[in-house]
Image (tube, rainbow, N blue to C red; front, side):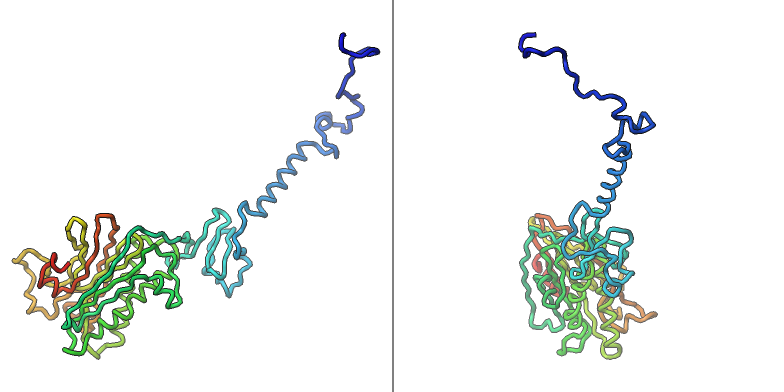
Length: 358
């Protein structure tokens, strides 16, 4: 053919060898699928897959975060068995006291209630901003208030961290005392003003997961009950002071109100509408619009409140009425229509009316 050099006689064959050059096994099938080592190709593929699987099990796909080590290597004195999550692939950071999962690569803390791992919560900052003010009459000697505009900074001053709580994080409280001797203040209101917000702070620090509404409600109820029990144990027989209270905890876009007694809490909307999410715990109901109420007249009752701090002579079994320190709690999810919240002493609230007081 044209184009080929002179002397070419016949086509050459490439890639063909005599059968005796490749038959090294008595099994014809294996002989056709052998590798260079003489091992069947299917065995080589299986061994390779096994090696890859073993390598994947030995090293996680994601690099272990700095400061974490396998939970099995953590000493019992550092992390007792009762605080270790069940399962495998857990890593622990002793300094941060937090877990990392090698399964989903998330951070976890141990829920002190359920004793199960709960995902660590990174604080979220809300667009809501707070502005706080307070005013009191000189004659309000039994009234105390607490304004903590930044609870996170307050926690730092007490060597406690609540960096996981949504911002803004603040607490405001109004304590209106009763039954104290004239001119000496109110021991119960003083005790509450000094200690309640610190109890709330420690509760928030104890769990670094997400605080849902139910958990917030439970924490405030526990704080009220614990504080009341402490006050009564220290002052049993010393005095009969008591106080009403409303506490307002702000975390992110949520407002948590807890109340005993009849301190008014009023949420105001930008339209001018005012609403009271918690009713007064008093007899007769000071907010009742029915003038023909069947409640006994106030001057005939030994005490007009149904819930309060203190009042130790009305907390014993068998006393009538027996007062409760358990607060009513309401969680309000803030929206742009909300303008603010007001905590108002009942005497002022009743004297000048809701709209003026707010």
